[in-house]
Length: 400
Image 1 (cartoon, one colour):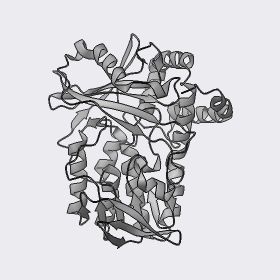
Image 2: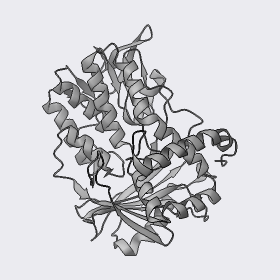
Image 3: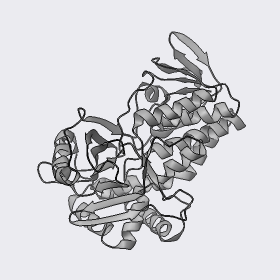
Image 4: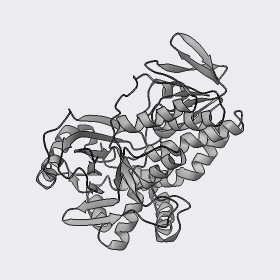
């Protein structure tokens, strides 16, 4: 197996396959220890995946729940107990998280090649390996774990679906005496410099190391998205939370990144795409680390079972696990792209304890097609309603 990309998804696939006895090589363009722009938050779902990979999380800051803010309403909710996931999350800056994961892959026997770009080698429509460092490397399966679409996605036909939403986010770090808070904080009522409601949220993620990760994210479905200035949006949000969090100066220049939320293809003859490269990002929170870890492990397990059938079975099983929820999230993003719907929806999202608990599970990636109880019922009902409304939502989408 050859893995292109040494982030969480790629490292998870490499670790699982190498531990299963496969010969694994990982290529990454960056040097070891590179920093990846991210919110650094890990959901209970992500913690479950890291536990499954037997990753030591002593270096991460434990998170007990989520504090949601909508206008003047504040609800502080613990992560739910009694589910298939742990009742805690974490904040783990990506430089340290990614190092722990790729070190596990190397310890399992994977050959990790840094500062080397790898591109798919295609023969008669089949991916037979990669071209890297001027040499051809063959493999029974190539795993694309390249994050946001780029050269690899273009070659494989795995680019973003043009008419589907995507997100943009920006973050920096600052010192704060509240760095050891046990709750993530999400402000759901963002406005740009013109006072227009922004479908997205601002976050304060305490890292437990003297700093907090502060950032904002927005969906492409909002009116005026192409003119949205992320630096201004972050500055406006920072001013909002400055006093409460007693923030020091920014410790680095704010850095932005794109959040893919769809992919034209996520498998083909001799290859699969995992994590962000497969569009596995929750449109309602921009989170994808947990999906990346899960899809990476799934790809490896199927490769170990049978490399020839792995791509097709992978695509089917990923679809069964994630597609309904992510499809509903994309449709919902069209709905909240309308400012009046967004404002009404936010009041509802935290208006009562019961609904806030459901919002918590959505924001924590804890809802899927198998979720029992009220959250599962609400999800399945919403999926059916938005499916019927989808043509109207797309026709009336806010102009970017």
